[in-house]
Amino acid sequence: MRGGGLHRWMVRQLESAANQAGCWTRVEAFVGRGFVDLVVGHGDQLIAIEVELTAARIPNDITKAESIGATELWIIAPNSTHIGRYRRKTKRSTGSRTRVLVLSQPQALRALARIGDHFDRTV
Image: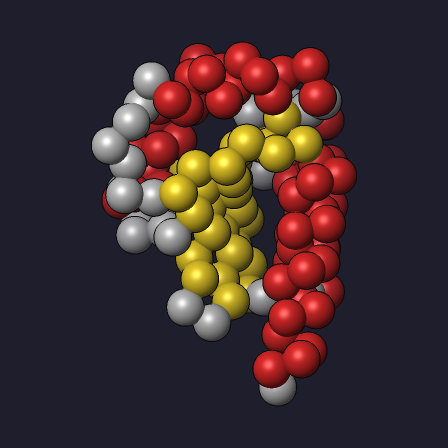
C-alpha cells in the first residue's frame, strides 16, 4: 500500500470497519486516473475514501471519485485541525456530482458503523 505508516494504518482501520459493517472493499483501487485509497460498496452506495495528510491533493481526489461514479467521496483528515482547511479546499472544487465529505478518522469509523447498523435492520 502506498503512503507512510500513519496513512496505511488509517486506511486499514477504515477497511476493517467497512468490512465489519458488511461492505465490500478495495484498497488502492486503480480508477484510470490514479489510485483511490479505499473504495467501499454497500447496496447502491459507492464511497471513495481518501486519507489526506495535505489539502493539495483534494481536487484530484474529487476527479478520481467522479471517474468511478462514486456517490460520495470521504476525505479523511489526520486530525481535527485539518478539517477546516480541507473543507475550504473542497468548496473551491464546486460542481462535483459526487457528494464530498471531510471527516476525521473517528467520524468516518462511526459513519461506517452506522452503515452496518442500517444493513442489519434491512436484512
